[in-house]
Amino acid sequence: MTFSPLALAERVVRAANREHPADAVLRQELKSRGRLAPGEASRVSAAVFAYYRWRSWLNEDRPVQQQIQRASELSARFSKEPLSFADKELMAGAVPTWVHQEIQISASWIRALQREPVLWLRARPGQGSALAKQLPGSSSFDSGPLADILRYNGQIDLFRTKEFHGGEFELQDLSSQAVGLACAPQAGQTWWDACAGEGGKTLHLSDLMQNKGLIWASDRAVWRLKLLKRRAARAGVFNYRTIEWNGGTHLPTKTRFDGVLVDAPCSGTGTWQRNPHARWTASLSDLHELSNIQKQLLLNVAQSVKPGGKLIYAVCTLARSETLDVVKEFERACPDFQRAQFRNPLAPQANPEPQIYLWPQQFESNGMFIAAWRRR
Image (cartoon, rainbow, N blue to C red; front, side, top):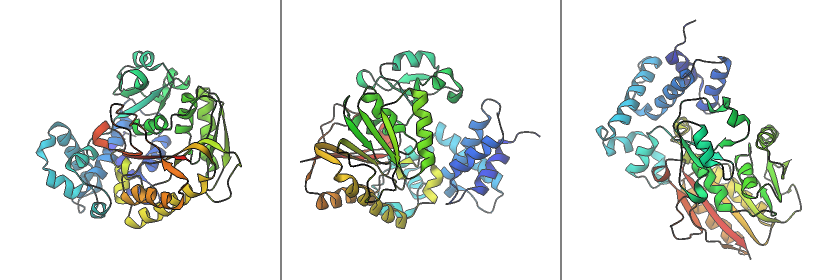
């Protein structure tokens, strides 16, 4: 059967909905097809995500394949001639109207959302320069302590490289790496990654701790923790232990930690460049519900921070309900925590602050909010 990127993209678009996100449906469809020729999976992915980026510009009365084709044309035009789209036009159509109540809308942010996302890698400590030479299309984000962050513009399938299977790097967004750097854990300390998921930040914390000390990694989904273990084995990380935790008041351990990271579940508005389907499935009620969960998570873990220890709150969202409102509520409920100043890890020349926003237009990465406290 002749392979048709448009036909496969249509299958994804038709199957995707609130309960079945487009990126998950896409992964499943590509997996079911087996090994595709070089570039075919990328073409399908680009077509699907173009459809959701440019959805407001499409005629829904047209056949789906024609809409996808039109979206791909708009995407190509924006890539070559971004100024052919007026700011007002982009700001009116790229995000749902409720966003204006939660996020400070700017033309630069909207334009960032409409661009193709950058792929970022995290090399093992001190190996950034060597890895960049091994992977054509790689370049370092910066020098010094940021030299192990690589931007990847190549065409090869990174998951099939010997470097990946040898644990020499992780695919991790730049803003996600900034969270680990903001934590700044020290070798020999004890940390808790409370919402560890599949372990991206756990592995980063371990590297920063030189694989010394101990990291507790918890999540409500056991299957995610199994993936974490698989990733840790590939990376040679062993200073961790996993435990199931549903986020409730019954904590998984009585340990008091030098640092706790709460990378809380959120609406993901900061990921809308990489995951444009999420723009059209999130709602204001979702944000308010998630905000309550985030506040409760912080309150539940607070007593696990030892005196003088750090508490880091991170969410890949830019919505006020999930960022500043959560911070304000936590500080009202826990006066024994004081704000901790830290420098933006991606802009070391900036003045220290107790909380920062990372915007997609600043660093070509996901949007992220990070706040830090120390327990008195």
